[in-house]
Image 1 (cartoon, helix red, strand yellow):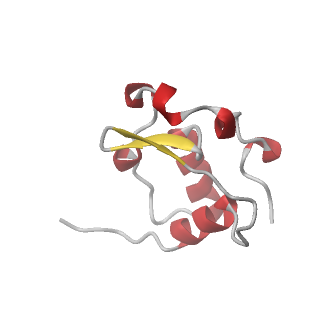
Image 2 (image 1 turned 60 degrees about the vertical axis):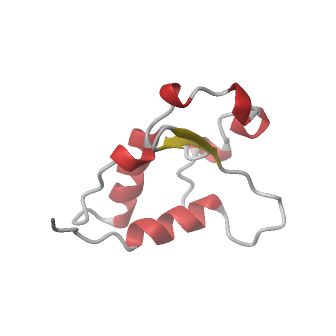
Image 3 (image 1 turned 30 degrees about the vertical axis):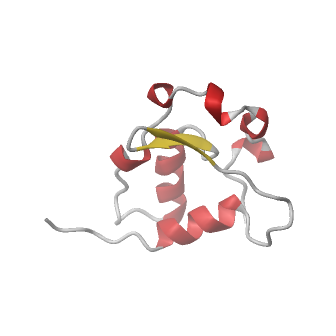
Length: 92
């Protein structure tokens, strides 16, 4: 498995208190569009370029911080890849 997350670095987001973050300065998750016809590695690349940090982003104007307790078996990378594998085209 390859590492998508800036060579294993989490951008220092694990130490930043959420209350000190303005949602307006973060990437909005709900506005990101991923082409379901791309390969999974390309979907991940597109997502990471759009979200900028998979650890700190906003959802409908609220700041969201992803934190792991160190005991989880599943990593952020595993969860992201799983979610992006299951993207299907949504029709209105």
